[in-house]
Image 1 (tube, one colour):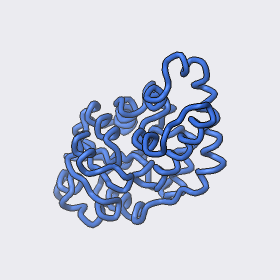
Image 2 (cartoon, helix red, strand yellow; image 1 turned 135 degrees about the vertical axis):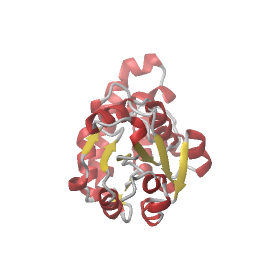
Image 3 (tube, one colour; image 1 turned 45 degrees about the vertical axis):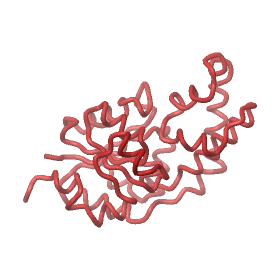
Image 4 (tube, one colour; image 1 turned 90 degrees about the vertical axis):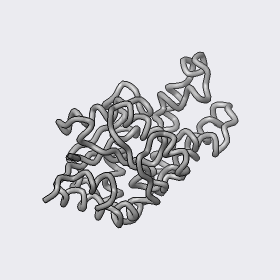
Amino acid sequence: MIKAAVFDIDGTLVDSVDLHASAWQEVFARFGHNVTFEQARSQIGKGGDQLLPVFLSSAQREDYGDALEKWRGERFTTKYLPMIRPFSAVPDLLRRVHDGGLKVAVASSARKEELEIYLDIAGISQLVDQSTSSTDAEKSKPAPDIFEVALKKLGIAATDAVAIGDTPYDAQAAGKAGMQTIGLLCGGFTEGSLRAGGCVAVYPGPGALLACFDASPLGAGMQPE
């Protein structure tokens, strides 16, 4: 029986994917790389450790990768973070999860300090039982580390949890950890790409998942009252 829901946050609970893509495009240009918005956007959902190798050689990463990531982090915090807004029905969805007797965790490739701000923006700080960020893991998504840490903090087996995310990287990471994944389209990835990544069900966004909760892998997997 399902005992916990483990949520991604960027593009899943808060509308931030385009902002992250813009920040990455800007920082790559500053360091002399012509990366389009679409190219950057296709990689959002990964942490910097997984994203940078797509666009930089190992020599380039060794030379100025840390400086690039530092500049991006500062730029995102000052310019883009204030523009992030939550998707509708997010607190209601998490309350519904709790009402069903499930634990709630957030497992994000964001840095710990960013994640805490996102939880406040979404109005869910008091609704989350456990959270993990890129700070807690050696590798970010699509590696399974972040989800594995979340499961360890929850004290449950992978088969007792369902992941909810908006990217194929969420589904790939959760799958490697042994979890099923519900995909949400609000992050901008197509249903086909989410299902190819391993999602067992796909909904337009948090509000739609809430409306279909009882029939979803979350609701259907709960222990009957």
